Amino acid sequence: MKRFIAAAIGSSLLALSACASDPQPQTVEVGLVDYAFEGLPTELAAGSTITIDNRSAAELHEFVAVLLPEGEERSAGELLSLPPEEVAAFFPGVRAVLLQPPGSDETIAAEGDGTLTEPGRYLVLCAIPTGADPGEYLAAAAESEGGPPEGVEGGPPHFVNGMVAELLITG
Image 1 (tube, rainbow, N blue to C red):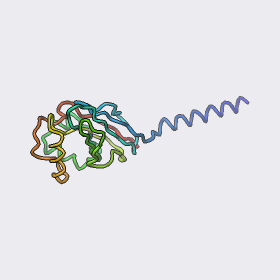
Image 2: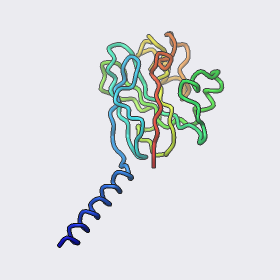
Image 3: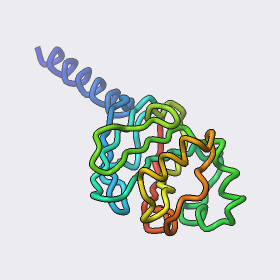
């Protein structure tokens, strides 16, 4: 009987350790606030999906996830302090762009649906100009044919105010 109990405990511990070492994809709601990402974990399993909830009263916010090249070790702050043309070199790695106007439940999926399937380190940011008119920005974005909208008035991008993070996708 003691051997049976010991075997049952041992197999239960193996099952628990397998679950702990094999994270499962999940759906995570991230709050977009002036100027941060609330509820964004530092690590998620490949196949996890991000949904957004813009909690700002006035600012349009976005969730942009950029897969960084393997071996890139600079911090988010270091990367975003590079000259604009060097930062732009990372943007072929964009895997998700989700926008949401203030006061709206509608998420605009400009790139992907928020599911991050590729393992690696991601730079997460909001590049909307501070104080930009949400309607004007969205209209300009619709006409920009995939690039950043031009001619929209506003201050520095939200990431300058701290709306930037790093996310590790494991898999």
